[in-house]
Length: 255
Length: 302
Image (tube, rainbow over all chains, first blue to last red; front, side):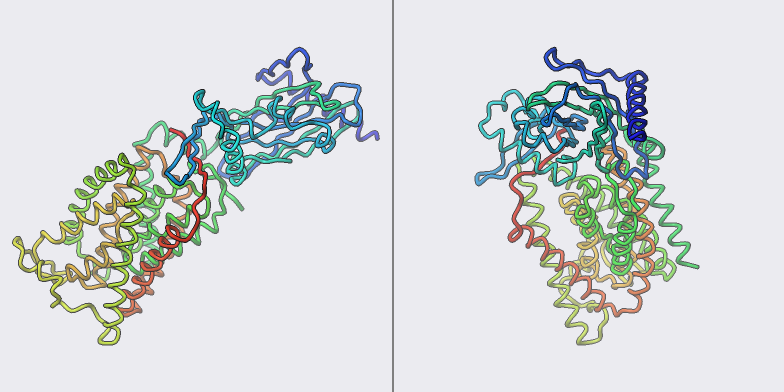
């Protein structure tokens, strides 16, 4: 009990520290959905050559009092990009363009929310991967939009970038929660946000958004920047590398 | 152990990539083909994005071709004069091919054209090689004779030159024309063209199989260096970490491939190459007519 209390206290301190140190602003919750105190253990993750995935840890304090329907749902969302989707039909191909679709959507919640929160409610608070991809304005009224979105989520799930039940949420005394969300190994660098929403009786009662940056570092960053900013140099380096390794191979062959 | 690829943006097992590189390098050293037609689908199958796979394979093939050609060079089995002529034709042909590729793309015919061309060429070349090499194995097991009607054209055209390494006295027009045609096809099909060039050298020009291997690799070095530079400099799709790991396996494989090739009869080599080419054709036919294509697919919008 003492250990749990200490853990909770240190976690809150950590959360508070992250909140004060992080220069990344939290979005304000709507008036009827109070701000929920929360913080990330680490708001900047470096992608290096030995990056094989990571985990994001969020500490959040859910509004009190709680009952048996109270719980927390979290999602790691980002970076947003434009993605084109093609559907094969009997007469050819159809295309839809999602002008704003997160590359990664890892979501999870406490088990009691599965029965107490409606899917529509999850979608309304931005925790439904199926509703995250936004098409062009002229394609918003397409009757096939739900089918397109469902297929989009399925393809992303196959890539391992959209994950359901991705969070491991632990509840401590006094409404403190620790949510650990798995960050896929193929998550692209960019700006992410960790969104958490607290529910009671199936209704959202608090929310928070925490910014997270997945940034390249070390050799990974050097090579990527070189390829994007100094293409000609990168081209020469690529040819030189091939010639060098081939030459070494030829030299070893003579031994 | 996994490593993260900076351009492909995924984590991969380097041991699997070294093995893939070794396998393709072995075939490259043995048959004198670049191996891109095998490496690209293997990389895509492993999860590398297609654009990165297509570009990076050229860089890997560059290294394995240099490693592979060295032993043939030492054995004086590289006809540089012939290789340069074909390369000149190849570079011109690929420039025209890029234009045709763009036109086909504009008219929405590229996918069908590429697949059908691939299947036709692979089946015809593989079938003819298998037929001829089986016949040769029943006889002497050496190179196809120098009397065939297929090669009569190389003797009647003007601007004849001697190619001592290949033991040929032929017009320079056929090697340039073959290089041009192969370069054009290579640009349309997005491959190095070694699997088309190699049999063309043997059957149409009469280059001895063993000289063909070294000469083909010699030409591939320049072609892949050109493609690598363009893809890396202007598209940024060459992943140097991926290429480096593939190269390690590739140069080892290429050495052993060249050694294995020397232990086989010329006709046996041609038969094995024919089996490989027919195998790729079979896979394409399966993909086109048997395997169901997914209803939906995703593309990163530009």
